[in-house]
Length: 233
Image (tube, rainbow, N blue to C red; front, side):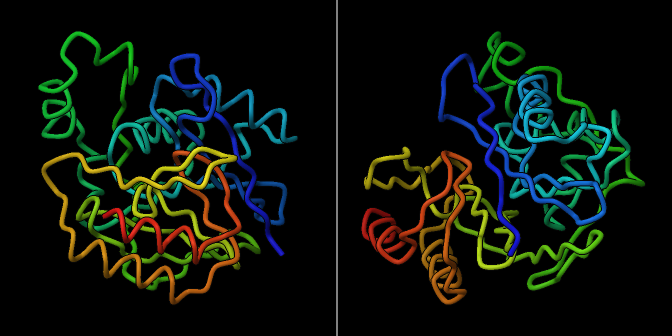
């Protein structure tokens, strides 16, 4: 059984804020679910090395969605390693050409804090970008990663299933390790509560053993977790 490894990206010097998850491909390489922002790539590399890999062994990055805390570092990793980046069809163009809309939109919010928070976001080379349809399985070496389109938090959101684990991005909410409290992150403008409820139902129907939240970490009580999230939503 493949087990996801959690990397704490130490965002802004704090623990348990942003995670990325690694899975081995069975041929000496590994994949990442989430890249984190460009500002945390060095911390990610330290985590990769501590787990026994080299960043040069990175085969692919699976982005849950294009918000900078989740995939802002994907372009840096793609340019540095030659890895493939997988994303939702509605999000891929934002990673290939972030200067067109993604970064100007973020600058309206973050202003002079843009670079200190998120670093220098780079474009993913178009020939390294792949899109995935709902339910599609991607095989990398001996590893299978399946995409589930899960809108609600964002229209371009994907939850990625690896075996009995599901890496949920933001669609399964935010929760601190050691706590039961679950919150739905609700930044404008894409929030759609009814679609989000449907996405929660989809994840529940997958009957995962563990949920892996980008904010933050793995949890082994998915039914209770999703029930509380839905009630709070």
